[in-house]
Image 1 (cartoon, rainbow, N blue to C red):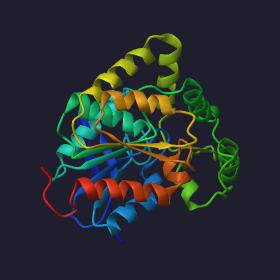
Image 2 (cartoon, helix red, strand yellow):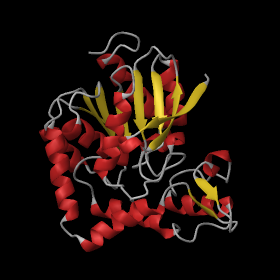
Image 3 (cartoon, rainbow, N blue to C red):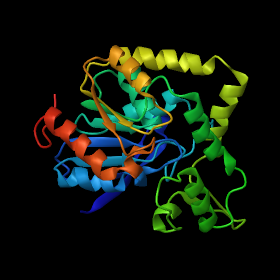
Image 4 (tube, rainbow, N blue to C red):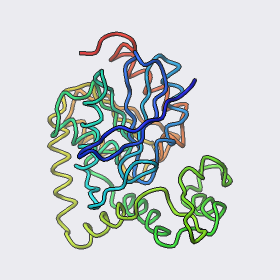
Length: 295
């Protein structure tokens, strides 16, 4: 099925790259990836959604992939959330939102605080207001490790990824990996996102110990305000979101549905794409008609 690539205005007019797959008249499903990823993380999911009658719209979050970098280094959760609200306002039908990790945090703030009622439903992929410190530091450490020095080749990047995700079958430096890298004039390959994104995260943790607790409180408050159909999907082997964290979220939003995908880590979509697509399609079909009107 053919896809259409285009740019759409995020908050403040920042240019956001997007790729739409499926019938233009179908219910739009907006897909927001995790930190350090791009819209290509959803490649197989977008095909599954389109084949099921939905219109999948995968975006590159600001500072990632082919989207514009923020000149001011505006990469707080609220900045990403504001982009989601701006994008949704430009779509002719209220979209269902699926957010993985960073995308899910942004979705919580977007629907819970910035624009309640903007989305038809919200799916949070291995994310909750309370995150495990060890899992967060592992992700941040991986992203920090080569942000300044880059890689001598895509093969070196593939080796680093294999060490980070030893549970997966090792993959070579194919076309998929190259989408996450940029070759610069020095001949080295760098991650396809703005280094200021990770620098801001680490700076906030080091200079403001209360920053994480304030974010937790804001996310908790946002979750408690949700009334739309809500789906929480956790990787059964996640080191970032515990079962206790999900239980806390379900106390705040008791109407939510919860799915645990046993064979997946925090990288649910990449670890168990078929299982993920099955549960998300089940949720969307029960809560929305792909072709019918969305209130």
